[in-house]
Length: 188
Length: 155
Image 1 (cartoon, rainbow over the protein chains, first blue to last red):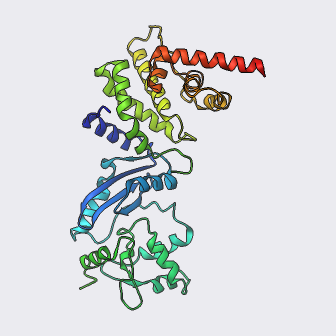
Image 2: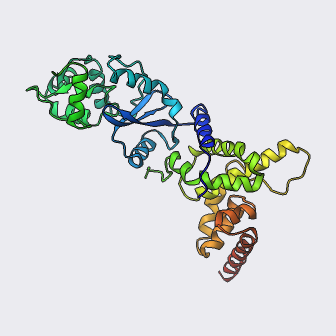
Image 3: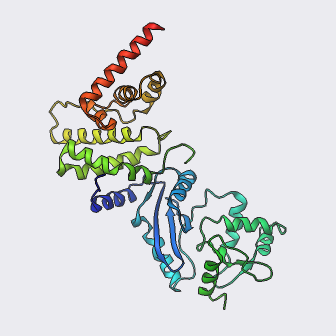
């Protein structure tokens, strides 16, 4: 295999990022305080934040949900990267990003919409969220929605805890949930 | 795999970028190959959403690369008759009609026939796609056509 010059590769990816022909532009952020993240944007907005990405699986999933034109284009993620950096540095409490939730089922979207109202530094419970979407007995279903949240951190499922105050669970692992809540001052 | 069998573009690009660059350098020279590389993959990206399956992607991208070379040559020498016939923008329907007819051919002959008459590739590109050369591609295609004729006569 002839290695292709880096400059050629970068030039194509930059051109693709502004071509308007991509279904999803993504990048891997390797150096966040909570490990590596895969972030993806569609023309409508942020469509994926993934922990410990296994690119092979993630790319297939993105292609399935949004279309096969999925390409790593760091330039297209500049805004997302900056807002996440600011959040991790404690300089940002809310994200000003458009979100693309078209691949999310209706009930999940309602729950995530309620979730987005839980403010920085505060926590809520699965049961409370369930009650807010009008299904007070659906705490377990709310747990499933949190587990499948396509935009963790930005849609703050880390702020949802058990009725007893225990952290309960987190798609990205409990260590990360704890780290995020400490960052926000919600956990001492 | 995605439902359609079309891999994410990132995979397709990573799998073929090196070969496409080598192909373009050979066809258009080192100087022009860089621009044609970007042109080829931007064209491929534009068409990628219309693919219905993930087969023959190597031949497909080499077809696009060939077209990019032809178009660039035409821009430079608009009055010159070109030796290479450009394939149409969307060549897949022809391939779909052709593929079932050639099912019984030996793999190399089948590929050569499909690439020649389905993808409209010239023999040089077919040779590249098959990992051989122009002459071998020409022989494989004509052997395939002869075999198909014979089968038709016997039916």
